[in-house]
Length: 112
Length: 112
Image 1 (cartoon, chains in turn cyan, yellow):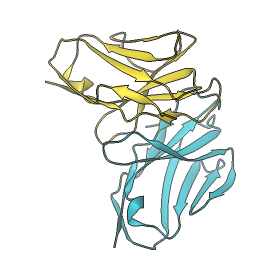
Image 2 (cartoon, rainbow over the protein chains, first blue to last red):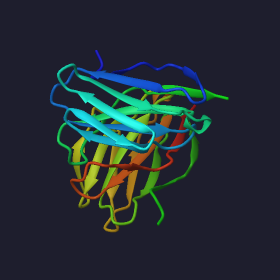
Image 3 (cartoon, rainbow over the protein chains, first blue to last red):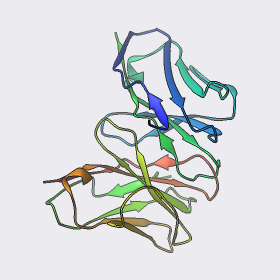
């Protein structure tokens, strides 16, 4: 069993839709949770960073962490074609820029 | 401000050969991590360098080695290449003990 599970998709939604992306994990020691966006043939770009359980909002993006369920989510409101990319969740135990453990990524396609 | 840069962008090698990949961190960052991303997978942590020393290592064989220079730039060396080493190799940098890591565009390695 992988430490971090993520549905690979692809997920196709119309422009303007609300998108929900999710990851589950098995290691209860994870405390720091990140979402990265990766465009084709590019490196991952950090979108959201949260610590422990709770919500964090940044523009059209909201990250949620439920440590009791070992479940994290990323919501994208008013999705745009430019949001079409692969979304990777990542987790860390120490929060000191050490080893990140990634999910496999979910490919998102936002259509006109 | 230049972000994380990596060279070369693409590389083709044959089995058994050796390869060296290079990374220059973002200005002000002294910690460099290397990740391997196979097609359709999330990045896998290889190792991290700080103050020219390997600080942490993932589950990769000794064929994978690295170096960090006094200017914080870094190299990843892979010996005795296998077909399975074909992947996107990503470099990430951060200030010491700061969680957020910034990724470069990667070097795409193909082993034939």
